[in-house]
Length: 228
Image (tube, rainbow, N blue to C red; front, side, top):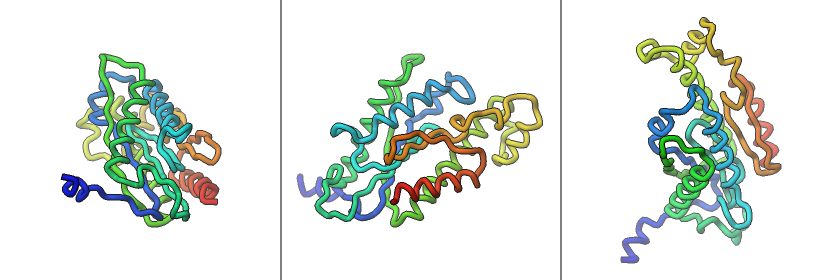
């Protein structure tokens, strides 16, 4: 039996950069009754969950360096240094990592969230590896862009019908929103539009600015500071 079990017991590469992406399960149903377009109690529960996942007192995700939350997902960068004798989180065993990350996130989120309709949140996790720092930067830029797109869609869904939104790109939706005297993108906080980063070198929360160039300009120096 151990032979069969060992066959699927794969491990991460020691010297690559690893990303955990933790997603809410069926959150389109879970969030159905929340305040639209942005529910502050939901976001605060995610931020509290994020900070609880930081490695403190032998709890949390070991060797994690950068945490980012947007929509119903959390992205976490973790990696080892060049010391081959360094203690690794579950010895980099993939099944252990994804199962424990899902369990921790589910526990912390349900602890912090103020429930409505007696619903309980569940999370799933995937883990994958990136070969270098450039790809780490590209990954977080990709997720931040996705967050912007989700925010625009969330605002648009409160103002237009599904038929009006059909096959509309984000820039089209933003133009549609700007033509009406309802909630505009510019009136939303950066916390609403881009949500939050936490970098472990000083445990501070960061909120991003209002366009993709600002994202790039913000992200690159902060990641560079982390690398150093």
